[in-house]
Length: 171
Image (cartoon, rainbow, N blue to C red; front, side, top):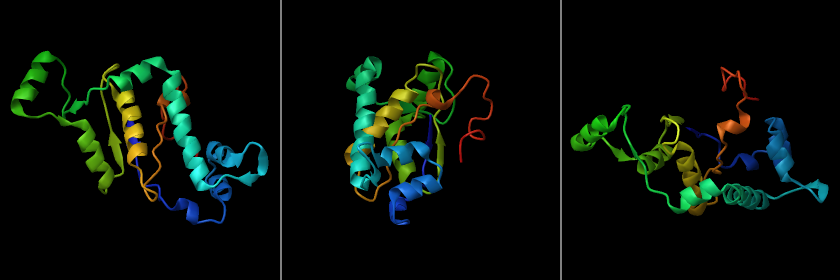
């Protein structure tokens, strides 16, 4: 799971049209979202687009019973700056006070100057579930000038044989 920040929360005010801005950045999915399906010449307002994005996120969770149940039973994750390979190392890290709240760490990261945070862990350790939890938390806390929280699973864009995911991403 990777958190990238740095998108200007007022990006929509830099051009007269949200649709123009989305097209300029070749964000076809966002451009399509901003078009009102019933009237292709009429772009959604920013508020309408935000409501639509939030509803789409909630719908994805509802349609995935495993994620929905995981979020209902969510237990906050503890994190470490170092890999923990087994139960013995976990007990040692606990005794040494090397574990910390992942959520608090991520919230601090989002307020800071760094722009990339990589969460690593073996399969099933809760990285994707935490991403969904964080997205939901940020939507609930969001103020008008805050960045827009979006959770995009890499499984949606990754294709077998891809070795450079970032280098192959559309500009």
